[in-house]
Image (cartoon, rainbow, N blue to C red):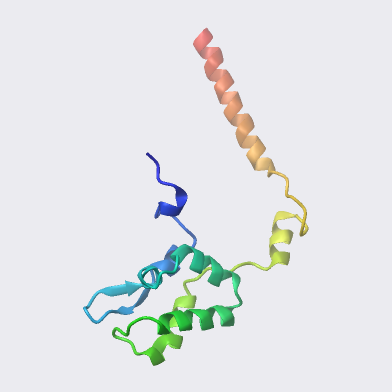
Length: 138
């Protein structure tokens, strides 16, 4: 049975951020962003996606408040901002809409057409299947 994507720890563009070191808890265990968010009852992937869509300052402020809500470990509540600033370096930033539309050749509101490379892959796949079928019949 295959796990649904939301339960899989496969590659995510947020992995570097989610597995970044926050600090050490009082019991000596390393705390990651993933663990910290989960302990606060926040879905780590949703929060990472939400933060990546915000401006850097807004996201840093939000993450600062989240870190301040954690029980202190080897850090003080007053360190929350500096920890958040450090962690923001691991968070992928969203691209501006104009950058995305220029890159993929679409305008805002239009549906993009499948890339030519996708069609070439399907054509090559069909050609291989036809060749295999043709040889098995000979």
